[in-house]
Image (cartoon, rainbow, N blue to C red; front, side, top):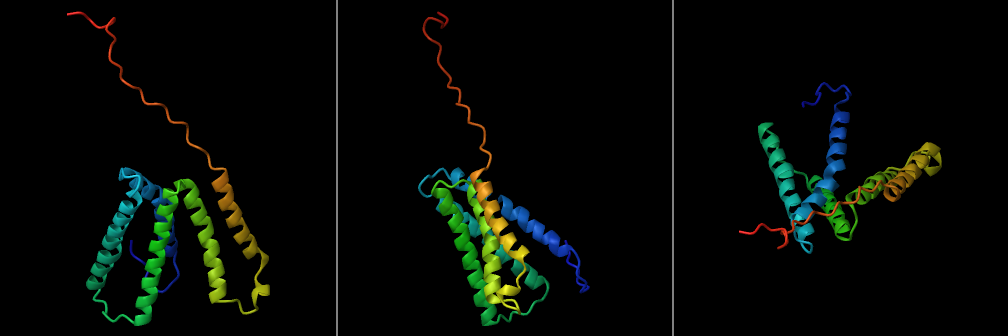
Length: 186
């Protein structure tokens, strides 16, 4: 998918945002499955996190490196840009690790990710307000903004508390050996 370089605002940003929604929407479920599939109740989450790191290396190191080389980009990296990007990566990794620790503490993907994805926009909105307060102060913020924060928090709680439960698992059939009275005689 190519981005529009004409300077006109298009809808390409929305496609990329939706790509992120889908990717992060299945992230917790896939991460939990990886943790369980490691077959190690004690260290499975750490093993899964190791492979998240390998995936980040492949996706977030090798791919941009190839793009930078292909586009002939400058290799000038201002210190401020490097530090903020490094901090962003650490914060993201800490968040991913927190998800795994929540799973290890018996949180389920549906509940953990509902809390994460309902809470993160609230944190983002409040942090953005703190960093860039409105010109007229907090009193200039319209009520729908606060309603949105409340609805995000309430929505996260509702999804967490009232999520549908999967059907009970059926017990696995155990193969039994024929008894001596029903076994054919030689």
